[in-house]
Every structure is written in structure tokens, then in C-alpha cells.
Image 1: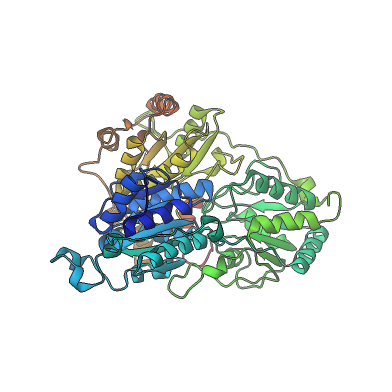
Image 2: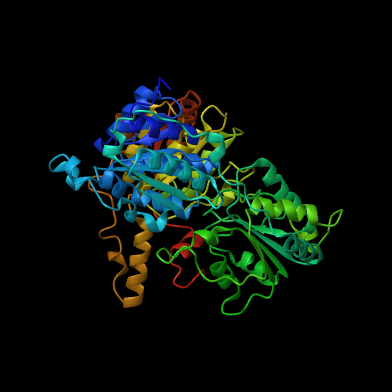
Length: 589
């Protein structure tokens, strides 16, 4: 810090530094002009450093992507009610995805006689946090300098405490601009997040005995950490008890998908063989599996599961009555109320010495990548599908370590095995289209200098809705490869309109109306170039694709964020289409 605290915002900026966030993502706003000044002139724009964004939703999405890699929060600054409303979709994504994030908002002066005419009145709210209260972990709107500092320290504690979710503190503009005569800072070390709770010892013993004795154990590996040691322990647990493992594309990589004990390639819904695996199981271990109740219903229908169900996780502490991401009620026989990584550590320690060989382990075959699909042809020319795009992209990056920060709905995961905890970072949590670019930038920021190439493959709808988030990557020289699978349509909804047509006996050929982004088709590559990134495309053929991807990889390795716009055939593989058109809870064709 440059000197003694003189202003309320100096003290608030000091609390942000004490929170340990390395960056604060923001789109500038007058409601926090005092804090902005203190970040620059009191802290020197260091610890935290400001990241300028072109939209509040992007600022939150960047913090979301950073947390997906590191498990740590970034700071976000949001301007008054208008900035918070802009950002609310991205905050909801972060809440559903259970990531830590320290969001600082601001309001015009709560004291009416301190407000400037007009603008301060429309940008002031008596309860600003009410806009997001149902999808943050904790909120506050303090009215003094000391209370503002304490609220930030508490919000930092709570967002870092498991289970994770964003927290929100709204600071009064007048409090920021208040003179401080004398100030004594808090000792940061005394306001750390509480440690995680250990699982109940008796429950661990019972669960370990069941897993050791099981003939057909299955692990549903869901929302776990990016810790390499925790990854290794999950493999050890599965191998020790011979458990088959199922993973999902809604959450990040949790188990090597080319391991002999892994089931089918991950997707957004169960395959028929994975459902059969669940129905044959005698013990199921769910590691914070998203929508456990819906998954069991997909396998067992209206029947109670025949297996003993062990569930590890504490996300129930975030459930509330407003958002229904508590999902279907799940039957659980043993609850390990703790972080799933801690549950696995305890279970491995409690297992009897030596392996517990099972038929499933002996019979499991090593995953083999399918043969490349033959390219579709139109007028004799090969055309690009998302499946082929994934194969060619994987060939282009070769043996380089990568992190998939985003994949589209039509992604075919069998073409891209996940081999470590950072190889895939999961979806956005809340299904908010437009989050992809910002999340990708945040993930790339966290990976900068790591030697791992961040890659985001996203649909054109997602890219176009959030494309200005990519400017921040150019501004701060954050290497990132974005590949747009551009089908010129909000195709997910074309499928729903086709379903409506079939149910109502109406023409399928009208399903595209109101869905296509054509006439004119946006030039995504040129948009990227105009924001300072490398833009390549549009790419129409497989031959062009291979050349474009090779160039893109070179640019990213040279430190340049790069966007490749690839025109792909419309259509989803059957599994992705089944996931889109689920008409009943978790049930697929």
C-alpha cells in the first residue's frame, strides 16, 4: 500500500488485498469510483490487479473460469443495480457450478441527502443484494467503513468454504468516499476460511466394508477437485474394489476416460450400457454427482434402486426454495457429509489391505477409440461435422497437454480421452448461453505460463452472445484457442420445434424458422481480429480445417489468443439429441 488509509475505499481496497484474490475483473462504473481510485492509487493496481472487461457478465464468467482451474476465487466489481442485473445470469451459472467468487457491488448513497440529482437515484437500491440473494451463498449491504471491510472478509471466508458458491457485498458510494481519520486494519490471518469437515468415521467404515464386499460396485464420479493427488486416489479406490466408473460432461474430468474401469465416454445423459451397469450394481458410490435422483430414475425407472447407495458431498447446504437445482429426491443409504475428495481419502484408508479383485475389473476391456467416421459429402466434397472437428483438433494439438474449457452440446467425447484432472473443465452449471467465451478466458488466465494449452470449442450461438469477452484475452495477452463449431442455427431449439411439430401433426420443415443466424451470417473471425485476436475462417472443408488448426496452434504457442470459425453440418449425434429432448426426468431412448 502507498501509505495510511485516508478514505473509506482505501480500507475496502485493503480488505480485498487481504482476501488474497490476485485479480479483480470489472467493467468500470461510477458507483465504485472511490474504490477504483483506491485500487489504482492506494494499492498500485497490484494484488489485486484489475482486469478490464467489456461487459459485467463477462467479468463474472472470467472469474468462473479461473475458479474452475484453481478452485480459488477472483474478485469481481459490478456497477450498481444495472451492472448487477447484467451480471446476474453469470452469477447464477457460478452458483449452479459451485465455484467460489468474491463479488463486490456498489450502490449510490443510501443517505438521500448525499445523492447527486437523477443518476444516483436510479442507481440506488435499499436492498441491492435482493436481486441475486437466491443464487449466492451469502450477501450483505453494509453502511459503514468498518462494516464494509468486515463484510468483505466474511464474504471471502464463506466463498472459500466448502461447499463453494459466489458471495456478494454491496458497498455504499458515500461510504467509499468518506474520509477516515484513523484506521487499524484487521489481521488477515485470523479471518481465513474454516477447514473442511471430516466425514463421520462410522459411516466411512460401513461404506468401506460395503465397497470391499461388493460384487458389482459402481462409482458415479461427479463434482470433484482438480487436485492430482485426489485424482490418483480415485483411481486407487476404483482399482482396489474393482468398481466401474461413470463420468459426465456437465462436470469436469473426474476419472481417466480411457481407463479399463471407465464406462462409456461421458455425455450429458447415460448410455444404455451405463444404465445397465447401474441396474446390475450392488453398491453405488456417488461423489457429488449432479442430479443423483434423476440419474437413478433413468436407470431404475419407478423402482427403488436395488443397490446400496453411498453419497459423498455437502452441496445440500446450498439448496433453497427458489432454484430447483437440488434436483430429484435421491435415495441414499449412507451419507458422507463432506467434500468428495475427503470421502475418497477416508475410504481408501479404511479398505482392507490389498486389492479386492472383482469380476468387473477382470472383464473390463481397455477403452478403444472408434475408427474415424467417414466424412459426409455434398456434391462430392467432404464436409465438416462436430465429430470430425474434434478428431482433427486432437490431431492438430498432438501430444501437447491441453485443457478443454468448453465443448458444444454435439461434442463426441469418445474422440478426446480425458487423462488428468485439468483435461476437461466441465460446463457452465446454469445453462446460460453466452458464458463460453468468458469462462474460456478465465480458465486461460489461470493456465497462463503453465505449459498447458487452453482450448474452448463452442457453438456459434454461445460465441456470438459472449464474443466481446475475448477482448480481455487480447488486452492481457492471454493465450487461448477458441474453435467455433458454427452451424448457423440455434439448433438445440430446432430440435425442440421438430418435437413440437411431431406431437402436433405440423410440418417439420418449419422447425428452422426463427432459429437460423443467416442472411447475413456473422463473420466471427473478423470480429475476433477487430478485437486484437488472431481470426481464422470461415473454414468450410476438411482440407481447410487441417491447415487452419495447424496455424492456430502455432499462434497460441506463440502467445496469441486465436479464434477459428468452422462451418459445420447441422445435426446432433443420437446421444446428444436424446439429452436435448428428454421429456421425462433423465430418461433417454
